[in-house]
Length: 228
Image (tube, rainbow, N blue to C red; front, side, top):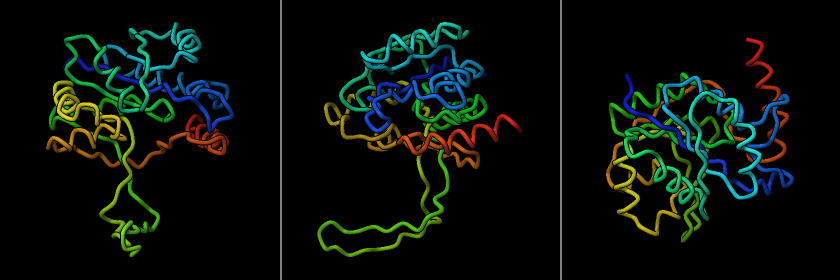
């Protein structure tokens, strides 16, 4: 039994690279990214969901959320993703023990993926879904211009969901203060204070919709998934 787990969905993006449409409202096969994500959390073990949104998309997201079973709250986002997540985590009920943060731009999340990550976070303190790196990566030294090639077997791409004990996150957020704005994800923030994150490699599709060209690819992948 997973202890008092809550979700924080990062859905405050402006959609500047999506033709002005807020990412959560982008449709894949007639359904919004937001609905795909909420369906996964509705079927998971979380007690409730806190959606971090913007002034521009809150009304539309509230309409989309009205038919889901789990309690859904809405919190206004901050200037950066990290500040938005902090707002969402801080607004959770006081008895929240575990938190699952997920980017709304990743519509292929499943309840099984959420539950697995939460179980790992309960055991280890923090966890994160990730995938193997298949491209050869080059790293250029900013000072010398020297280019090196890291061993890709030692590399992996960090995704969401990212889960953690709420107390650890709040401790990390308080420790870094205003510098939290510089952190691109929760694993980096937690590792800053010495938390060892459990990374869970997954094979299934968990792509992030970042540009308009990603939509037809996501539609093809979603169609394949629904036909299985």
